[in-house]
Amino acid sequence: MTNMVTFGKATITEIEWTNPHCQIRFDVMNDKGDLEHWTLEAPPPSMLAPREWSRKSLQAGDMVKIEFHAAKNGSPFGIIQRVTLPNGKILRAYPDR
Image 1: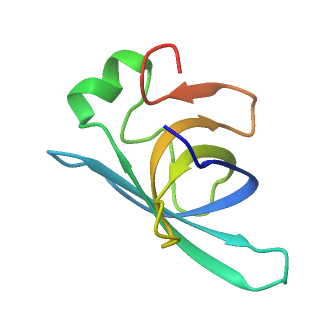
Image 2 (image 1 turned 90 degrees about the horizontal axis):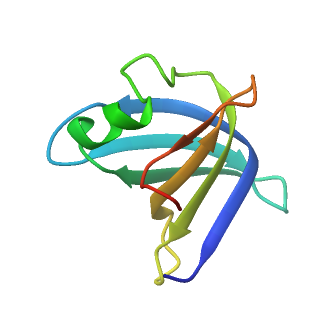
């Protein structure tokens, strides 16, 4: 995949811990100082749990580093790859990525 994007200061706004895919929503300030609202798709809970994710891993208001593959059409949507928590712990959405 291409279009890998990393935001070092993303603020989590909502998490949907559901099947068939979890959704993670967050806000970031772009280079122009405007607030952007993003939505990322993640694997289902049954795939995230073995990788140390839980309903409590991310909470609204958490500021994290987030890495994902962005939509090719430029919309604020993507597929999550990794989240680095404030304590430095890395949560991977997929094995060895």
